[in-house]
Image (cartoon, rainbow, N blue to C red):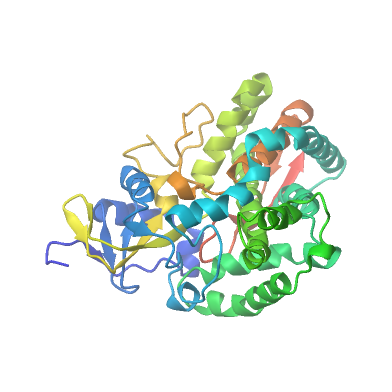
Length: 389
């Protein structure tokens, strides 16, 4: 690092920054294409084009040495498709992705739409509801637990395990430390999972089938069950929360969807862009990496700040404005490149079905002030009051 290298002593994980992150993200973006974060001893890349370039540079900026901001988790030896590179990544990701590809999801779209319609009907019958707990949690928790095919005991704890994993990916602060018991419990559950406990037609069972065919080994099959749990819950829950809240505070945008349901897909992308459920992951440089005029030295760790990239005014004009007619298809809410979130298609499908039901059945959406979701690496709302009319 030279005297000309941009450097900031920025706190990214205080309660205040989690509640109001965008001024901090703007400061980081304006400091340079890559910035040294003094208190974390890491670099950060936050501008849209630089983030996409970094995510494509998967042969130089590696995920296989861990994607956390602490070495405890990075050195834990976990096996999953996120923490892998090259051919190993492809080998592990392929069986995980198979049931979540668009072609496979076509078979369950009608059922997800039916559940979405039933949910909206129930919420229309009550005066007010919790936008997160009552609206956003329902589909991911009820659908995913059945699709994965876990025994009942595991289903009820999936959300706690997923949230603990994302907290543990941050710096080893109080949130990360408090998440360790749930994370260990989830690891113990997966470690003790018996194939006979799984629904034979579920996603988890398909991993064991891949092991039978020699594409992965049995230990990998067991551990990869977490790859269904983690990317399939909070990404959808927080993304749906962003969508519901934004449609409530921007009623003219909801009116547009009601008048033209072809705007639903664009509304989902814009909700994910403005709400970006995953704040960041890290990668390790295995060779010098250049961003602008600055070189990240080999051996240094880099924070890829998705949430900042999606609010980069260099790419999106007036990025704080919710505009469903904006072309936001290139957002990085689910990452970019070979490590793009495995559950992205499923999350988008669930959000589209929820919004389709709303567009047909709901006249107006009212929302109250939200409570921020307190997480190291997840972003969004913990709760807000809402009503349909």
